[in-house]
Length: 272
Ligand code: UTP
Image (cartoon, rainbow, N blue to C red):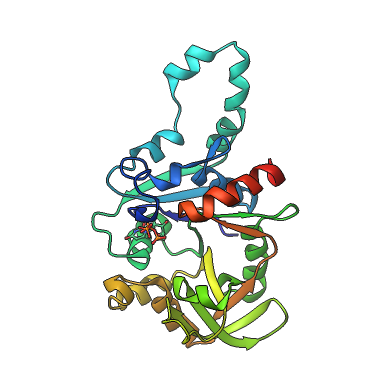
């Protein structure tokens, strides 16, 4: 039912400098796959077929990754190295990839709005590839699609974070419908230390209804002077139509070397 998945990938990735000086952070490898490929895998597993990628300057390798490389294929044809391309070939065949360029980095909300032309009037998923989510039985997006079928409204994935880390995230509060579902009534982007409405932080998985685009268009720059998706979703929440979901699985914060260097090792051991 949800066929589109948007990947905002235009950000500068400053927390990972100097690695991201000339390489997109979404192309950082975890074992032998770039981060964005894990996100695309998860979207395909959840039944999505249209991968819409918001790129920016210096991000051309993202497009090359989801394309054929005839020279390379010719070079390794007939050797045992061909086997290493089996997964990516099948992934490329399973989905359509479209791209749009965000010319000015005005924030995540603006990046999502930039993707509007690729999404149209459809509910869609959003994956922030630097949040690598794993779950052995059912991927996080697949869990969220199931919930979308039930609630037909915007779903945001949340996880509990330590109180002294809430200032790094969008944080939600609301009415608990069950252990893992909350009807959102409040949302704050990167609250000052000690002012967060809860310790439930939004991570990089969303399912958004298409009215979000209009809400973003009417959203002024917020925290950090950026157009924040959190502010636009809060507008949807005023109609009672945003559900926060404490997903099953594990999230690895791969947006900074602090997260990736230790967690990469755990991920390698557990999931590959
Ligand atoms: P982040 O703030 O985590 O990414 O944005 P960043 O700006 O690349 O990283 P740092 O903070 O400088 O290290 C969340 C997601 O939104 C995208 C980023 O690419 C990332 O996937 N984004 C952010 C855009 O596409 N455009 C923007 O203007 C801002």
